[in-house]
Image (cartoon, rainbow, N blue to C red; front, side):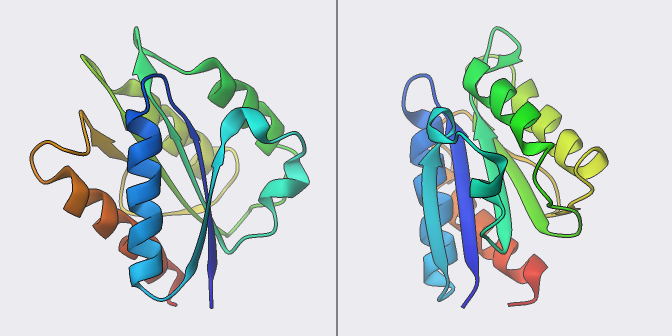
Length: 145
């Protein structure tokens, strides 16, 4: 059984909701998922005990949340090269944060990334629940699990 760790930074609770839906998709696939708020992660090693890492942040005024920025610097110290990674986030007007997280995971951490970042205005709009659950299943597929 694979273990996926999903770490999020949310402003209004929407990115947290998406994180939980991605976790549902992982669990529907028969695997284990842990959802953690970014500001609670204190050591890079806390992120190494998983088979895949999914990071998400809301976009606010064109930027990712401060707790996710801090986490990305911390994650550089973790040994994640070659592990499956994915990025997601909620946004109001623009959605830069998931793309920036995705590129950091791909280019700096050298992770094996899932198709592209998941960017939703809301989990409740335009099939967002199904898209977020499918993203969790896509993480499992990328692992070959």
